[in-house]
Length: 168
Image (cartoon, rainbow, N blue to C red; front, side, top):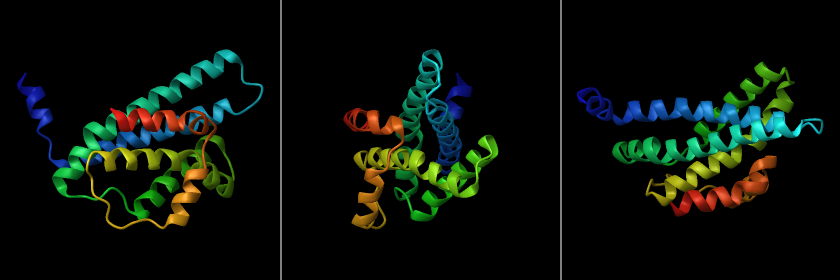
């Protein structure tokens, strides 16, 4: 019992670091599942398998954001996000795609942006709803561009996931 209590008393920086590591794993699952579902020859069984992977990663992403990211940012006074951090997330995703699928850097960057940007926006929406402040307003042109770009699953399920995440 003491061990559980001690684990809960983690400093906010450690919480945020742990959350970032776990979110990286979720993003890798989003990338894998999305790219495995794209080929037309993917069997129904494989689509169900990879679809479940994607849904579990989405659920975990929402949970990590609510239970680790938001409390840590509120305790430290950190802001929702900064463009440099978002760029780093995209770069890590691009490197993952290149390493796993052997894609050219340009294609990997584009896929990373299309797959990951909706998830970045979702975590920002959850943080906003739960009171994490924003440092500076993003340009409306960038928001509009990100809002139109979706992976195949986020396109189909994104609005539903966003509504569910923001209503809980």
